[in-house]
Length: 414
Image 1: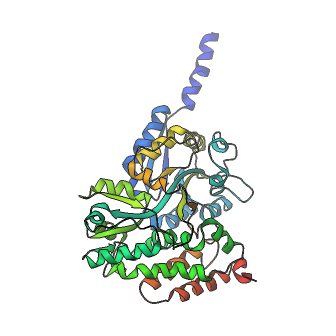
Image 2: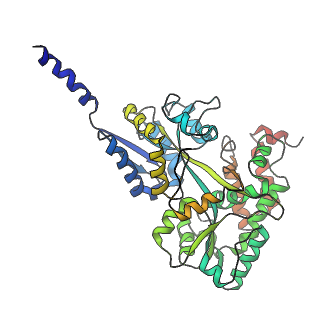
Image 3: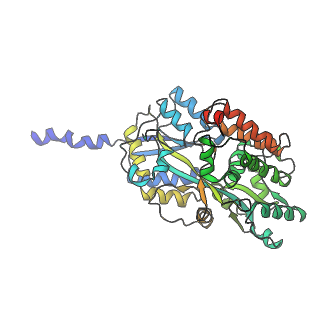
């Protein structure tokens, strides 16, 4: 009788490993094939767990996710914006704390963990992706016109003028999709003008006001490039402006490393590469290297154990290698990540050598009130491009807007 009585006990582990399907939310609609290959590699090791990748268009992601969370229909796992946006979700009880997740503390730096942790250090997201910023350029056209990669901001403007004189558009960027001006133009340019991370912190702690000469200079740089943008740029979308570059009609494109997979898939018929935004003469060079995406678990998920198994796998070098090579230009944040195979991704990563690096200016603190710093920077930069504000007026609007709620802006420079 005894062996027969033990049989159900032996079957229990199999019952525990019954098939689970997790849903994963993301703002990366371009990455479905690549993410599915990464997720298949996980499922090969955990055959009982399937993950369905279900992304949302980037501009709608934050609002869509919040609606789902409040309605109880959110995915089991979802991409987390860095700093204030996801911290608020954790504080409202929508995310699971991960302080006991194996592999988390061992494989990530304090700085990267901080982007998805509370003030007192409780993590709620696995750091996943960093992205870099720079200027894409048409190497064949530069060679044809005898142009060198510019080393200073003034040299960049000289190059832009030479391109325009030759009958080409210098820059493909446009303001039809407003976020692009905030993230890939203004916050791409600004670190070189405000002094990188150290400068950014001087604004955050009230040593500097948000309309000082450095901020005015950053908005002035946006005004400098305005004459070199496409005609009718105010109506052109992100995709439209990418196509202007890919079709060889514009020589340069302020962009992010996340554009690499799309640009490579479009296979333009010219050689292209990227250079870092050059600093003003005499200023130290900086590059925006942004902690972009983490992964968290929905506190209402009924499959938290399986979700934790996946997050633990995300802390491994194996995941980092898959991510870095399947999605070139999305840099794994894991400190054990192996070298990248993709030439363009390696070029972006090389910008970090000999330059200061920092996240996008508005992210860590300035999204925490209304009007938020991101919107103020975005609206100011677009108004400058369209001739509706001077650089000084845009800087003043940034200072006045933040002073409505951000205490250091109320007492700055005293």
